[in-house]
Length: 447
Image (cartoon, rainbow, N blue to C red):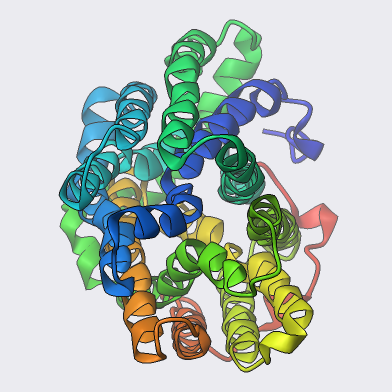
């Protein structure tokens, strides 16, 4: 294939960027929206049911138990039934669970429904990684995964002001029901819009379809030896474990921050319900900017992923730790630091999965994504809200200083571990690729 065949991603299959990626973006935005909107409802649920900070943390973490239960099987499900079908079924199921949340009558029922919501959403992450790896070549994958992960910021941002507006006119139960409906509607659109395979995409020319499949097959041919190994040999890779632990520690910050931020903002005592929702969403608007920047930069700078993920993760932890010690009388400075936390908080996420799909063949990359994503998301989604709630309780029940400080430290350590996660032909001290632009003449379809 010519070195110019994929120049600017427009000569071959450019409609993938206007059909496949928007569909993935909207699907995952809805998914993440229904996952994090519990943060806006939490102060109202706590008041209605008389929950302690620790019980509220358990409510936030219940999702993780269901999520991990099916995420570990996501690789097998996606390989067995196809990633497109797994994603569509998950859309229907988590939409139902999101709406049922509004019909719960007590703490036990809430925990059960949050668990089932996790079960329904568990397969989506690994299935989406596999889905995009089947549609986009290595050179494009950083940007493709980056656009997918922009939905994390979009979902969390929209959950703030939309939920705040609904809460200003209704209660948290109505909010949950209304916000669960879009998943059902988009489920129909997903099956209509997304073809079963590249060969089934009639909006691509036959030449484009053949060329894409040839390039993707050529990339997989580099892993002949690995294909003969069982998938579980991924557990022998030290870099995978460092990535997993580092990602897990950072996930505790991400999910603890997401759940408890609205509660922290309400603690100022000066913000309206809508303003709490709006400001709660702004860090995640910054998240979209951060993901967009870091994935494009990673592609341009030698497709380097390790340091592009590690450095922002350390900076995120430093910012939240600094915010912990800002006096409440200077809450505007704390909010500014929260914006920086949002900017850097999700830069790690797409690069973790891109790196796994680039250093492993598909049959190993899919279970690796499921394993790393399952473990780290479970630890983050369960441990983050619960540990933050417990630390808030230790701080007197109304102060987040201890919680923010510890969460920030977790992220700093996580970033350092990710920087140490080098592959077979890499060295920790080799940082040149992350700061030197790729010469345009060196780029080829095979690269």
